[in-house]
Length: 174
Image (cartoon, rainbow, N blue to C red):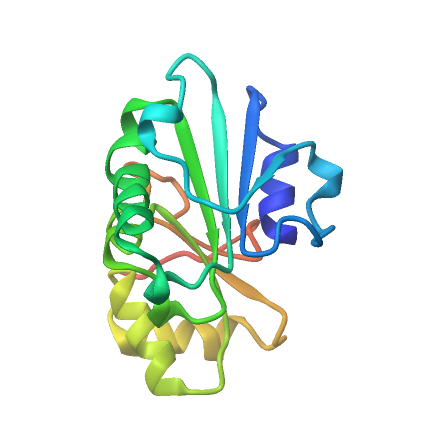
């Protein structure tokens, strides 16, 4: 959530609308400082005005138990609205394996923290297009602090596809 907020305050141009999809929108206070609208359902693309620069934040949702309508809205949010409705999407997930395939395939920036299970860590590396050994070596060699994060930027033409904590560049050896 802190990483999302840091990206948000640096967005140029700023987002005109921020929608935060949260399982408990009435009681959470962690997004009170960003001026977004708290909602409990993923919006359908029909509800999104393409003339408004918008951010949709999906905050630790339970994707496996979503009904068909919410799964369809999630699919269209990532596969359509993110490219045709002037909409950016950010997602938090405590477990990289619970992220639906459409979200993994359409995401271009991953922020990943170390987990204790090295097999799972390697599997996450494969899901972001890296060889598992290379991914594990980055964590072992560059990230001694458990609070460090690896940023994998898969944006076409990204000059710095691998970064520690967003700013420290990791030069990939060819």
